[in-house]
Length: 67
Length: 383
Figure (tube, each protein chain N blue to C red):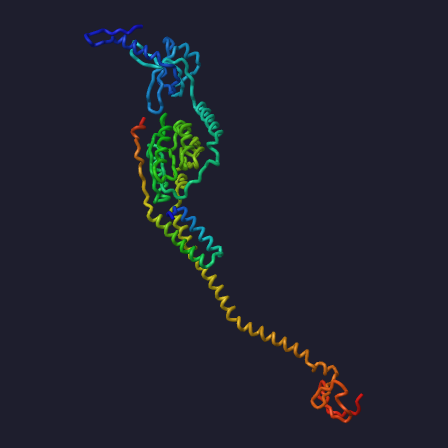
């Protein structure tokens, strides 16, 4: 399985929370959901922690467009 | 007129007059065209045959001399003043006596804001009819773009404002900036080109097209058909942050979202970092709470099952006892005791129940059992 994007991970995590809060999950399922949820949380927070703000300039042939 | 050179050995030399004539000849073969510019240095005098003016390109100050016969100029009744935008129809001409090149005007039309607006309105209707501004074409912006493209003018303020707004809201933002010309006749194609290049860069999930406020004419490139079409064809969602609230360049209509300020643009393209982390933490807390609740629920269910299990043998016993009582009741109902109590009697002779008078003879001793008690008796007679 490929690593989910932050958005995907967050959406899945929130879906899991909802499922758990509905009280419909069996014990086995609850434990499975919890493990998956923790993993998704880790994915999300790692992504946030490791994201380094970066501003780059596109290397363009700016001179060529100068009027 | 024939242009002739003087020969000095193998060098051909022209007189000034013949050179000018030659160039003038060549210029006169060029077609008549419309030229747009601002009127400056308008010079008209009753004693002159021609009216002179200079057309200036407002974007870079390039100048072009224009002449028109005075009678023709007066007949147009334009009442032109310096600074007005005009369209001049004419052809290039060389004033041979001075070697001055200029535009010989055949007609002059004022081209004001109204004309611009009308042209813009026509274009807007045409593009709207093609469905370029339709709401169903609008794409959703990513909540957390991997990388943001910023196409901006080479005026520092607009660029800095957008960058600051984005990074203060979401410090880990990754932004790729493409500077371009956002003003003048080449701006539209230059912006479209920058847009294409930035979309070709990897991981770009959204593009912000930004330009600070400016005059109506400054913002015209953002309503240029070529740019509007380039924006419509862009594979990446676009936020148009051009001009101020009151400006509505066509780029705003074709973009997937529009922002009237850099802050609004930032709000559209990145989430609030603090809000995002808080939400993530809330999810994690809810995850733990939800799991614990599931465990507690299972625990209660288990306890209940155990209680049932413990009570089960007792229940079986009670059920057996009840069945026994019921059987005893039925047994009692069937015993002769109840019959005796209704007034019947059992007569025994020598331990045998007497069912027939032939079993006894007169004088025999018998035993009589009643519902309550009994007595001995002697048979008097048999019948």
